[in-house]
Image 1 (tube, helix red, strand yellow):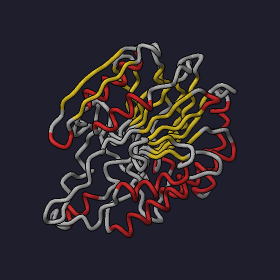
Image 2 (cartoon, rainbow, N blue to C red):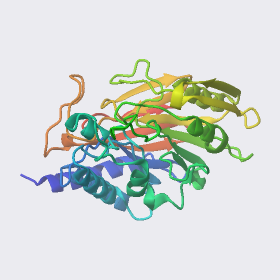
Image 3 (cartoon, rainbow, N blue to C red):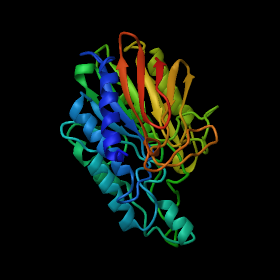
Image 4 (tube, rainbow, N blue to C red):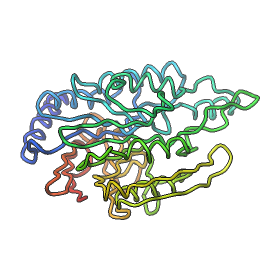
Amino acid sequence: MASIERMYTDIVKASVKEISAVQSESTLSFVFITDLHHRQGGNMLRTTQMIQEITDLMRLDFILCGGDISINGPKSKVVAAQKEIIKTLSAPNIPLLTVKGNHDDNSIFDYEKRRGKSAEHVVYPHESHEITLSSIWESAHFDSANPYSLYYYVDFPSRKTRVIVLDCMDHPYTHKANGELNYLGQWHYVVSSRQLNWLAHEALTFGGDSGWSVLIASHVPITQDEVIGADHAIRNDHALWGIIKSFRLGESFASEGGEGDFTYQVKADFSGQGPGTIIGCLFGHVHHDQVLYRDGIPMISTLNACTNREFPESPKRKNRTITETAFDIMTVDFVQSSISVHRIGAGQNRIVKF
């Protein structure tokens, strides 16, 4: 019986041959992997080895990791697992873009193990920034008012594509008198007023340079109606979607609201740019494959990479087989306005129109 490593190599070669048939000089290709929930030394290292082999055999513009990169536990083990998976996901000359997941600040560990009376094991945003984003500091555009943010964008000029990464756990890391956090990344989902204004005035503006397309990535779905696996809504999601929709239509938008630490006020005017192209909004978190459309914009989720079957209708998973993993190689065809989604691991290939 062939080893799993040999089986994986054969799958990689077959997949690269199939994907190459839909690639051209004008297409955009990237890996999207999410919800690895990696344990140091765990089986996700076989997945990252596959991705490394793929980068050696075909052109990829970037690798996008959708968050929840590690298991939760003592901070030292979590940080070690995060550093290991980021190192093994990274490939020479290919940007690695990472999204903050709701497990990635490890706040759930103190809450469950220490009854919420400590933040000793929290991985704070500046630490996450250093662990996950240090390799793209030079190429990424962060909030000019908040350079250590976990939201940013990266441009790919040869494809005239901007990838915008949102932080949907963008709450202040402040503490109560007993040392616990006021808000936990685990389930306090919010887009701050600062991030909303950055999106409206920096990330979605192109200074008169026309013809650009936008791809948006978040960990949790931006809007949650009809999304299988959705749990908590994002605070200020009405304003977030309003900005995105207005960009697509080339319209103006204004909104204010929220409460407490999450009040916001934002105005956007895209009428001078005209209607914009949004390739799609990618997300993970829900551990389920689905495509939904909101105002003509595709919202696309990818199955969790970790070996876990969340729903009865999800594919079966088994360690030391190809179903132990799941990730996509996506190829964007701008002429056909379509995304060819090639699945490696559990699940199916998909075609998504935009």
